[in-house]
Image (cartoon, rainbow, N blue to C red):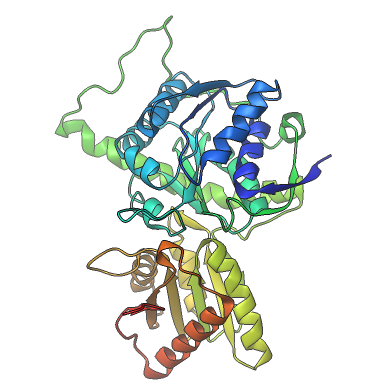
Length: 392
């Protein structure tokens, strides 16, 4: 039976690690991730988690250690944030191109300079093309559940890709809420022990890995990673269904929708802002305004079909990004526009950048942003990108 404990988002990630029982954990602290790996260290020290806990001198080394362990066929785990993720960048590509199913929570924090420890999504969005599966969580229970689902997803023989779950700095990472947690034996039917069915390094059967690959092979190896993502696209709904069957909880699959069935305008957001949007929608509904919200939970693989289905009845989308691709637009809105371009229904999609560097975005702000979406629907086309709350 699960027990319900009051934990922060960071401790929820640590408890999920304890439940999954990875063989190797490599860790380096960085604000606001530090309490994830501190809690895991406590579990190991107390004998509650029989993992090999590797203390390293940097995040680059943490991922390198995970790569080595995963290449030996072992379940591996780490966590990081912001500049730590950026320091890992070389190793992130190595992990994905070597098809190693490392699981890593990333506590979203703004990138400096100037130094800023509050949340935005610039860090993880900058690595969206590194070959990692990406999920964005909106509450502490979802953090815990998603870590378990990602082990199941990443370790599947048809996928074999590393994965991240993102959680907003301080809004989730240091906020305590009741969360259901389990012992390892209680989830064995859903997440059995990892047995590497692909290649692995074995001293008894020597092999070379990571050697040079010429043009005659590199292209095909890259396409194989794309096929892994397509396999993940098919597997995610099944993993979600099986998780709900075992534990009685669902987090919405690729996209967590709220009152979208008859919505004329749908607001898109990620992480905690996506959950805050539900309150904004509810307030507008009480005023007779047909608004809905869609929290983009899975960013890689990107849910093209699901985006197209939501556009079938809506008159406009308004997309709130907590990051910006400089010289272009918000990262999320560009993907949504691309998905609609490939479909049969084209509706205006207004981009809004908000909340950078931890700037607060309340449900009242989101109500105003949704109203912008109705203006766009009336005009039939979006305006220039809006930088909401910019003080100049």
